[in-house]
Length: 198
Image (cartoon, rainbow, N blue to C red):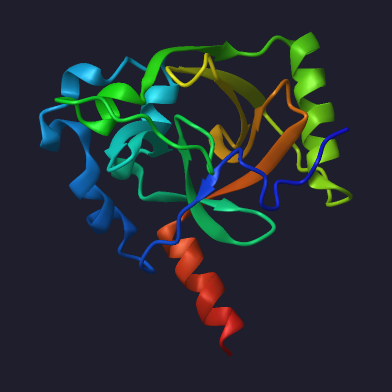
């Protein structure tokens, strides 16, 4: 059974300053901290959509800053990142090493899903949407992120509409828990907020 994320420790929701997230988060780029050699290569085209950042508690995944997108958890509308370890756990401290050298992604695997496996991904999305209308999807890309944290694997199913990633489902523990993520631009987010304030 697919459980809604709620407060389950699968993703860490990160509230960011409205419309300033790109500038604020530049301060945690790994290369700016001398940690570029800790970053594993993302498979193409995921490397065009996603970037690895080095936070004060370990590595995380977030939208590529060059694309001006933000990830929003559908139920809460909160911007978030995907950490390399579960929320609520106690990150280990290793003398002489920064957190992102200890808690990081060791490898990524991914590719466009076949028609048969895309059917499984659509079933996953339908269950995770919990009754919301199922959008028309062009294709599905699966990204698996392997972490140093107890062999943890995070699965990201990236659904493209009009050739562009617009929805993701993130899950762990063989997708017993999942979160639906809307991929939106800052301009779209601005318009939504302005309309809600009218």
